[in-house]
Length: 127
Image (cartoon, one colour):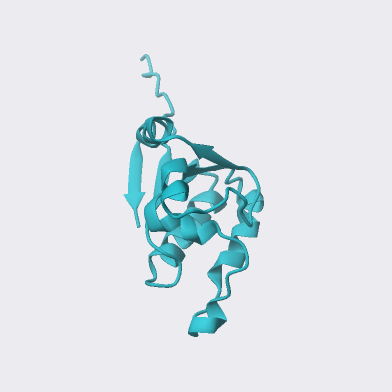
């Protein structure tokens, strides 16, 4: 009896952050999902677009609005092998933000490259 060859297909997950950090729980929820996938060594990429780019701005303090500061957890990405982090350049320009972030390895992409990179993933979750 011949056994069929089973190919292991690793599916990639894109998490698209489009909400400001403290206006809702969306950013925290996205972070939690990314860390869960990372802890199980599943490929996950993070994308920041629209008001989601505010999550990467340095010097924010959630205590000012009585919210736990989850943004400090971004420093743990390297321990979870989350290395693909993309930011929409147009979103930065629209908000007059510099491309200096509180985490390293962020890639700023133009609109077309951002969209192409996003759609190259098998699954996209939008927060």
